Length: 264
Ligand SMILES: Nc1ncnc2c1ncn2[C@@H]1O[C@H](COP(=O)(O)OP(=O)(O)O)[C@@H](O)[C@H]1O
Ligand SMILES: [Mg+2]
Image 1 (cartoon, rainbow, N blue to C red):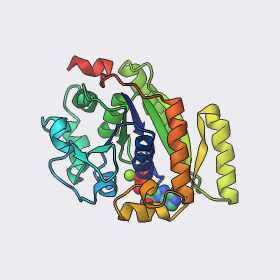
Image 2: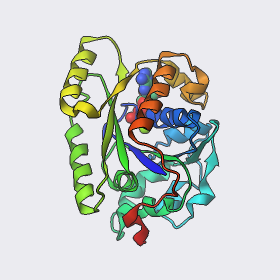
Image 3: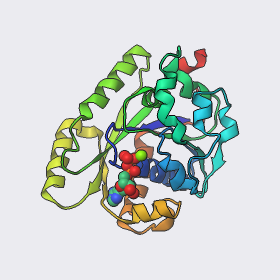
């Protein structure tokens, strides 16, 4: 079991789209995948099932004491399972703030699960929920859109990851890959790509996700773009991304066990 957190404190950069379609791609490579939606907008939940703000959800696991196994659903994608989110997650940062061990609640809830990959979709913030996702993850994948102003604020994410690695003793937690999204052949996109190459070097993934409307249409049909339009530019790119992520972040067949998360 390998857990990957999809994070970027900016909204609208393709986190949810990447979580959903990376999960679908890994499933097509014959892995059993769990998507965990901890964003109060619950877009991944909608994109994978068509359901809007269902309850119970991961909120009841993180803030209440519900067992994760009791909220899991099968999605419209074969081999992709979902821990759904709902709007109450928008209050969770505040509700969890004063709890001891607050960063560990997700890692603890995932303990013992048997999937090859867990993909965690996060809100556009660096609050307690995102910290839970990072603490539960082995690696981080950061989508960055190749649009104007997309790099402002990105260093904050690096700082939070470094901080959690030290504070929570998570030796292997690091950015495994930065994936460029909304790629088009424009000057801004080329310039931004150039900056990313310098900044992230070999952590910048080769796969670029093109700007492509099929992604949004697929969300509306509640399926991945790999089901909706497999031969579209974005369908091919997300399949390629799954292969690239698989080779950089291998799956393990052992049940989930985040070392420090076991203390609870
Ligand atoms: N490569 C892309 N090309 C075109 N539209 C995209 C692309 N990636 C995402 N979108 C659309 O942009 C919006 C924001 O993407 P989303 O994945 O929800 O971002 P985030 O989760 O970071 O807020 C959504 O409507 C989504 O369908
Ligand atoms: Mg999102």
